[in-house]
Amino acid sequence: MHEKSLSDLYVLMIEPSKAQAKFIHRELKAAGITRFEIAIDGNSALALMSQFKPDLVISAMYLPDMTGSDLVHKIRADEYLKDVAFMLISSETGFEQIDPIRQAGVTAILPKPFESSQLKRGLYNTLDILNPDTIELNDFNAEDLKVLIVDDSKMARNHIKRVLNGLGIDNITEADDGANAVPILDEQFFDFVVTDYNMPQMDGKALLEHIRSSSNQRSIPVLMVTSEGNMGNLAAVEQAGVSGICDKPFESDTVRAMIQMMMSDV
View: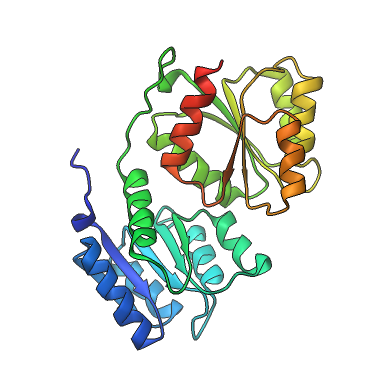
């Protein structure tokens, strides 16, 4: 199968500001992107996508007819478009505005203005998802690994699963809350757990504490994937025995390194 390169990527940019669109367009061309379309609002972007499916959507947060959050959720709810990579470019920093986009599974969230290196990292994260590359582990085969994903957001689980699939990991079980993960852990053995921090019934810290103190898999590696910004909460997770903490967006190169580190310690 032919691996996509930056020049192969088909990018759809949604930006209502002509000045911003021109700047982003110039940066995309400098990064090696030659195939792209431009839309000025969410509905026209969705209409374009129904005809030509892009590899990557790059959107502003505030569009004339909807927000970037609305747009990515419409994309994720569409069976035809649900796997399209999404990148947000925005000066918005509010947790309530940004977190729904993180939870939807994105390749990058860039500030406005952004640096060329930040754009390229987001583009390469997109390629990592589009070009499967089995992870190399000393004593394990990626296809033999059994993983439990715990997250109350189905979109977040789908994104994490897609990144893991790209690393050659296909044996994946899902739970939508820590409370529902507990009986699964009692009945099945896993090679590692990927869990969110914020969940309604049992959060990631409580699940981690259960695993380390009460489960029959107390030494299992646990990777926490979170948009949690409270350093005190994250410090408590580290003290509870987490194997690694990964920010959302869930980037494949970071995850690859963390999995290699976790499994080398098993």
